[in-house]
Each structure stands twice: as structure tokens, then as C-alpha cells.
Image 1 (cartoon, rainbow, N blue to C red):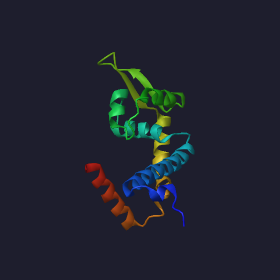
Image 2: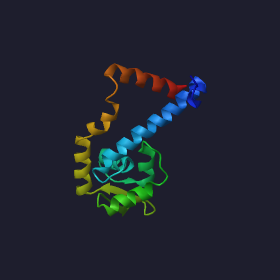
Image 3: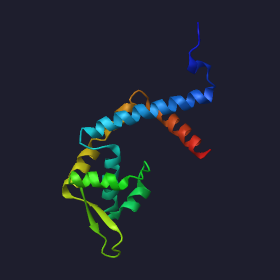
Image 4: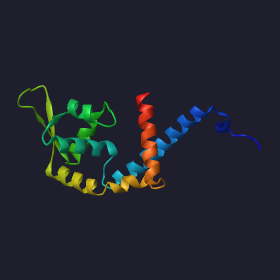
Length: 145
């Protein structure tokens, strides 16, 4: 039987390819979940950061806290403004800074999505809890090396 291209690759390269493919699958499925609420995962992350902050944050503070570091945080905020989920105001203490805060509509949507986040986790249903724990330990080990 003839080997495919991936079967000929070194084991660790196959691992890298599989991790990228898996990330892409998980990312696409999470985007589908957030799209049902008219959001992207990055937009939800901004709403979550603002909710957790309990008050306005600058775009640079939002960027520091984002899971996916995205230099386009200003564009993300602008899209959320168009959806009336956040608002921007000039910082009273430093006129050079812009404060971003959740609107009531943004807070309501954030609460709705958060209450249903288990929908995002469904992508991992193929794994038993023990397998998830092993995978988490392995991924942490890789991050530290």
C-alpha cells in the first residue's frame, strides 16, 4: 500500500499540521456559534472584557486583555458601536484617551451569549472528560517548553 504525503512526514511535523487543522475546525465552529448572535468570537471577547472590567476601558487596555491579540481592536470596537453594543467617549482625565464601555443592549447580549456558551464547547464532545484533562496537561506542557 502506498503511503500518503502526511504519512511520510516526521511525527512532530504531523503533530503540527494536525494541531493547525484542529485549531481551524474549532475556530470555524466557534465562529458559527457566535454568528447566531450576530457576533464574532473576537467581538464577544471585547464584550466580555468590558463586562469584567465593570467600567470603561481604553482600546489599548482592551487589547492587553484579549485572548487573540488583534491590532485591529479599534475596528472591532467600531463594529460594536454600529451594533449599538458599546459606546466611545473621551476620557475625562486624559483627553488623548478614548474610553469604551458596554451599552445596556451590549450587556444584555453578553449575558445571553454567556448563558449559552456550552454551545461552543460542543466541538469537544468527541473527547471524554479524562481525555480533555490529558490534552490540557499536554498543551500546557508544550506552552511551557
